[in-house]
Length: 114
Length: 112
Image 1 (tube, rainbow over the protein chains, first blue to last red):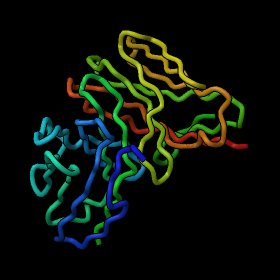
Image 2 (cartoon, one colour; image 1 turned 135 degrees about the vertical axis):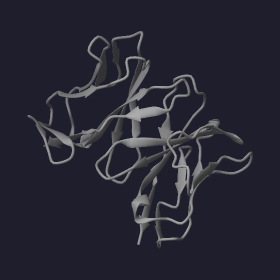
Image 3 (tube, rainbow over the protein chains, first blue to last red; image 1 turned 180 degrees about the vertical axis):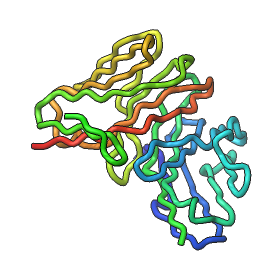
């Protein structure tokens, strides 16, 4: 499967714990985007990264949330000290370039906070 | 017919009918638009895209129409099939870096 791979598919955390969500882009894609989706809503942009660089993090809360896309390995979205309001589906997308190419999405990580 | 449900607008059609899903966008500077299909428990799946220098684009069984004057986008699905049942989102590019702004979505229900 050469698509965008996300893991885990489901993640359960207690309030105050840390959540780490991973995303491996499609082969040949160097642009990664993270989105959050609440039930029955559209996706909301969080952060856009290229290898080793954050290009746009305007949609990501300034506290507790961070993202990286290292030279080697998957992109990571990290949420520290999770709260109930962090419960959502988190989707990763990738594209080969940034000049209006369609983004291809993974199947998401469903995060539940107890 | 089309109705507004508690959360998502829903379009119910019979198998074999043509479906039209509409989307209004807000940013007149948007220059790239995409339609995605999302099935339950899955990520958005790319259907078709269109750039602002076009007003119509066709794919297999799908057509996207863009009316920049009224900032309106539509997705037409010909000969709708039960497998087309899903939530459909339009998305627009509002920045040069291809970060997408998604609409609220329309649920399409296809009855056999």
